[in-house]
Length: 423
Image (cartoon, rainbow, N blue to C red; front, top):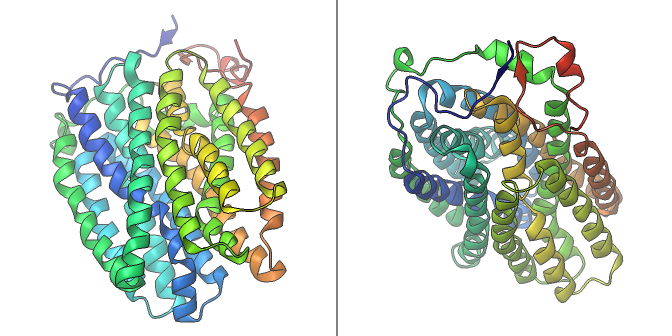
């Protein structure tokens, strides 16, 4: 007899955390972690000019950061599913503080890549969506899960709105090195917030909740399932677009003669309107098919980018672009992760979200590195803008056949191969 996934809490776990507690602490952690990350583009010109590095040197370090985030995100997800999120978040907070200090004090491009790239990337893996969404999945019912993920994603957007102008202010008033050291200390605030996400049933490896599948079984099932592959491919495009824009748009605007303040305000507007975009995507995910939401977002991004690069560039056009792009910025996060939870259940949600996010970070690596590479050789970002448009259309199309129904376990293997067909 076939067995359908349910959304009941994992057996063996103690009483679930309250929705308010999970969202308050989880949102605050994501606000800090994502907020600081979104402002890294503001350091591109100060650091490269002070150190005599090329833009590709800086871009490569940020590209490694995104790749590191993706790689470590898989293991952070596994650890969070096995031992609980609390220990993973604590480790991530310490690594974030060390990485930001290293970013400020690195004397060479290699050390800069190791600290800004590897350390901060590992830190982000332990303090952002995959780990937080695992807590949400284990403690919030399926009826509210997409909404709750939207709230957490919106918090990351609010962090961008809050932190990017703050980072610009710190750079202007303290200098880029001192600003990074201030941020380094601030990341330790994540540690007390992690206490609010300390779940029962994870006190030791022996007391971890029992699971119907091993890690290997869960991975084999997911990677043979076409819809999982399509979600991964779409998330690759998401990473390419947002990280290219987030890191290179400040320099793109300055190259075009606009002031640094325009870039700061533009990134802040993206963060502000992303609050509404991600929250709305989370709410809609409870009412309509998530694949429809995703396809609409990706196609809309392609249209918005096309209009932006073809229209005359002014401060007003930048603010309009940032406002609309903000609505689409991280709005892919709630429906993508909610779809994974709906298809495969919550037992290995952090790990599977980590693999999905790894694809996102490969795209991020390509977007940020290619931006610096193309600029250093062509003196323009135009080629990468065009590629972002093409990829947006591609992601729109490949999300359409995703099947969101819970996977049927114990059925013939050919069911999985046919799962790409929409119901």
